[in-house]
Structures are given as structure tokens and as C-alpha cells.
Amino acid sequence: MNILKEAKTFETISTELLVVGVTKHREQMQNWTSFSSFYGESLDMWVSAGDVSTELKKLTKLPFVKEHANLKRILFVGLDERKNLTEGDVRAAFGLVGKELRALKVKEYSIWLESFTTETISVTDVAFLAGEGIGLGYYSIPHYKTTSNEVDKRIEAVHLVTTAGDLDEVVAGFEVGVIYADAVNEARSLINLPPNLLTATDLANYAESLASEYNFEVEILGKAQLEELGMGGILSVNQGSYEEPRLITLKYKATDDFENPIGLVGKGVTYDTGGYSLKPKDSMVGMKGDMGGAAAVLGAMKIIGELRPNKNVVAVIGSTDNMVSDTAFKPDDVITTYSGKTVEVLNTDAEGRLVLADATTYAKQQGAASLIDVATLTGGVITALGMDKTGALSNDDEFFAAFMEAAGETDEFVWRMPLTESDKKRIRKSDVADLNNSPGRDGHMIFGGGFVGEFVGETPWIHLDIAGTSDAVAAHDLGPKGGTGVMVRTLANFVQRLGEEK
Ligand code: BES
Ligand code: ZN
Ligand code: ZN
Image 1 (spheres, rainbow, N blue to C red):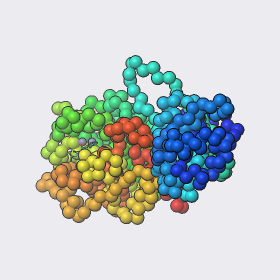
Image 2 (cartoon, helix red, strand yellow):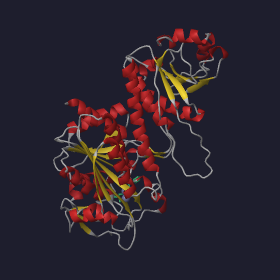
Image 3 (cartoon, protein in one colour):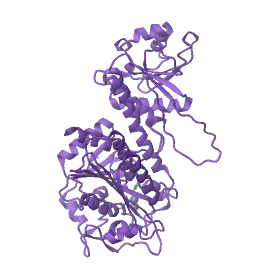
Image 4 (cartoon, protein in one colour):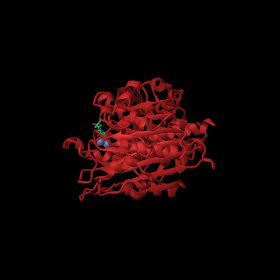
């Protein structure tokens, strides 16, 4: 999106479409009287009669009125009671606006920022939420239909209408919102790519392109190098595959000494058949999205590259597919991970934790002083929490509490699950190895993440299981069905906050 921003008042604006928030009690709205008298008495009447809805997130389009040749359409956004309005509501409402803008094929639009403010949501906040929400809602899934006649619907200009607030700050707020949305959308597109078009090599190429755009240090390890290092976790998952694995490392250096970087570790399984513990055919469909954790980390890195926070970051992604062939690993195999710990493979479909084991060990070796791993790891998290909540584990209450503040701000729901000593015992239960990769189906979200925890040690750590939240089965306020890019925004927001702490 190439966006121009100017500040104008609605009296002087010339626009295809003006976005206006409307609440039940319009008298509480700054400038409503001047706006309605500018537009004409009929406007107030329509709102009173309910023809312009004030119901939360309901959109009403008013057409072109001759007297207002410069203001062709108004898109009203219902906001219900202003005092109840949360940032999440405003973001979601702008998501729906984004969808409408795409449907209307507008090339230019304006937002009256003050009409969305509350006592706690400033004009700059609104600008940020608009940039982000509209950017997210506007996204559509790239497709391969030969009959497509999609025209270029790019938005060329946005006018931010405001008389309050520092204009530069407001414009910057909008721009940061757009940066967040663009990164999420790129993560979504990675998730939505078919597995024949996104292999581990392709994912590594994408990471390299990010590195050259944002000046990250990059290292891509191929099969031979992983063999040399003894990364038996990722290698055994890759063992049945024609496609080579990749261990991708990106470093964002806020300081030259690269002190205490946070490690972001992503599961990048580009296709999960289950291996010899083969998935039933209906559960296999959709497993192109098993690299959602990698997409979340790469999306967050894109925002970090754009905004350059004062916090060192090392991102490590383990990428491979999980296939069946005469060379594939098998249940009963005993493997040696990069850490030296041995694992009895009881289920080749519990492959993500094997990849993450090596990636986590590598991140620590690269200096990670804290760790967050993100993965579409278990169906168990869906059984426990549904499709709209990310499940978490952590070994550090303070670190987790700080992370939850970031998740609260981005409005991405995260719920922490317990990891007890008896859970750890079950992960360590094996007659032949240090660990087993599948202690059972009861509460198995905990075993998946807990397995990764075995490679973390004392380092403050958060595990995020996004198996439910990474792919949406239906369209939602902030986007279409398919890859959601969940955790891109929260990870980036968290790193930004850590950068501000110092
Ligand atoms: N990639 C799957 C988890 C998954 C399930 C992601 C549904 C997205 C939607 C993972 O590798 C897997 O197969 N997990 C197994 C673990 C089991 C074998 C212990 C599962 O959840 O059934
Ligand atoms: Zn699996
Ligand atoms: Zn998987």
C-alpha cells in the first residue's frame, strides 16, 4: 500500500469516501453538531431514526449528495456507547471498514479520527488502530484461479481528518499501524502458500530477502551442515523427504555487543503428513499451515526491521516437511538431538517438538537470554481452548506477565496452561532414551510444549501453541479465512516494549 497522508477538516476535504464513527449519544461526540450542520439536517434525522446504525461494528453507507460534491460518500461505523469502547473494538471495526473499502474498490478515502476517540483512546491511537485494522481487513488470499479478472484495487491515498493532536504524531501512528498490518499480511500469505510452492528452501529464501531489506545478519544451514552439527531432531523429521531441511537464523542487532538477545523460535514444518504415524486423510488437509510459527517469527522480524527497537533479537526457524518414504524415521527410532539428549520416537506425527528442540538449543547457543517458541504444535490446544485462543506454557511468571501486557494491547488472546513436575516425569519416561516424544493424548498440549521446555533449562521461556489460532476456518473481523498471522503483532509489540524498558 502506497499511502499519502494529509490532515484536513471535513469542510475542506475532497474525498471519495469519509469514514465516520457514530455512537448512541452523539451529543457526546466532539464536533458532531458542526459535522451534521455541515452535511445537512437530514443526517441527524437518519441517525435518530436508526437508518444510520449505532450498533457496534455495523456499517452504513450514505450515498453521494449533490450539495457535497467534494464528499462523495460517508461510511458510518456504529460504535454503540463511547464509554464502553475498547481498542480491540475500534481495531475490529476498522477491519470491517477495510473489507468494505476493498469491496467498493476505492482508490482514496478519508477517516475522521475524532469520531473514534474516547477518554482513553487518543487521536494518535485511533490513527494507529485505523492503519492496522484497515490494513488487516483489506487483505485477501492470493489465489491461482485462471479465470481471475481481479483489477488493481490498491489504495493510493488516505486523508487523516483531524483538528486535534500533533499532526506528525498522528501520521506516524497511522504508519506504524500499516507496518504492523503489512507484516501480518505477509505472514498470512506465507501460511496460505501451497506446500509445493513453499518448501524449506523457499522459506529460507524469504528470510534472506528480509535480511537484505532490513540489514539482519542471516545464516542458513542446509542438510550437510546440520549433519555435521548433529542436529538429530530436525534431521530425523526430514529423513523421509526429497526436500532439504533448513535451519534459518536472523539476528537483529540493536547494539554492537549483541547483549542479551531475546530468542524467537519458530516451527517451520512446510507440510505435515504425520510421517509413518500417518494422519487420517481429512486431518492432513490444511497441514500446509504447519509453518505458522515460522511465519509469526518472520512477520515479527519484519516489524522489528522496520521500527528498529532497542532490543537485540535472534530468530531461529527449523524448517522441513514431514513425509513418508523408505528413508523416513519411524516410531521406535531413538534419535540424538543437537543438545545431546536422546529421544525415543513414539509418534512421528509429534515432529514439531523435535524440530523445536534443535532450534531452541541453537538459539541458546547463539546467546538467547530469553526464549519464546511459537508453533502449530498440537491438536490438544484446540480441544482445550478452541480455535480462538493461543495456549501458552512458561517457566517464568514475571516474563510471562510482561508478555501478557503486550498480548492485551494487541488483543490476541493467550491462555497459560500448567506444566507440572508429574508432566515432566511423563516426558522423561522411556526405557531406552532420555525423553519420549509422545507421552499420551490426555492433556497433550502440555506434553508438546513441555518437551520443548526440556531443552530450555533456566532461561526465561514462553511456549505458544498456535495450532488453533494460526488458521481461521471462517472469515473474521480482521481478515478472511486462512492464515491469520497470529502472534506477529504480539511478538513485535513485546520486543518493542522490552526495547523501551532500558
Ligand atoms: N501439526 C500438528 C498439530 C496441528 C493439529 C496443527 C491441528 C494444526 C491443526 C502436529 O505436528 C501434530 O500432528 N500433533 C499431534 C501430536 C500427537 C501425535 C501427540 C496431534 O496434535 O495430534
Ligand atoms: Zn505432526
Ligand atoms: Zn506438525
